[in-house]
Image 1: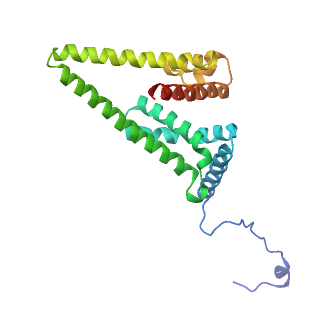
Image 2: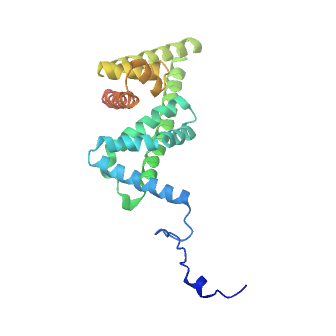
Length: 221
């Protein structure tokens, strides 16, 4: 290798563009950090009453919330209910979120896990109660007959509760929820069926579910 002559020494040295990031940070890590910061900011804004900010939290977290719920309850249909309940609770409790005590993602998923565990326990208690009632009545009726009576009464009671809750919704909310949960349509299919934007369909379903949860909770009290 020869020593650089005078002309070569005068050539400008190309400088790399340096970014203010920690050594060893990869682009994927930077993207994850940016996503985490955005989610935290949205949740803080939601805690101040910004519904649009919480819509951003909902969109960012709904898939992961559903996966956590499925892992705990082991039932896809039940997991959807748990996921919606968890997100509604996150919206209601958003003012309590403290970023100094943990990240937004962890905070939402902790609520989800607790909701899922509570649902599993509640379902088990209901099954135990039905089994106990059936065992007591078994002395007077045949097991098959008693089981059918208990199941029929329970289903009738649940149907009455749901019909009453649905009646509390607006026509637009009820139409969207019936398509999504009774018709088995996705949010996209609901928007196409009703001829409305996807965001509007999601809002109607979300608001309707929130109202249903509140109504059913009032009935239980």
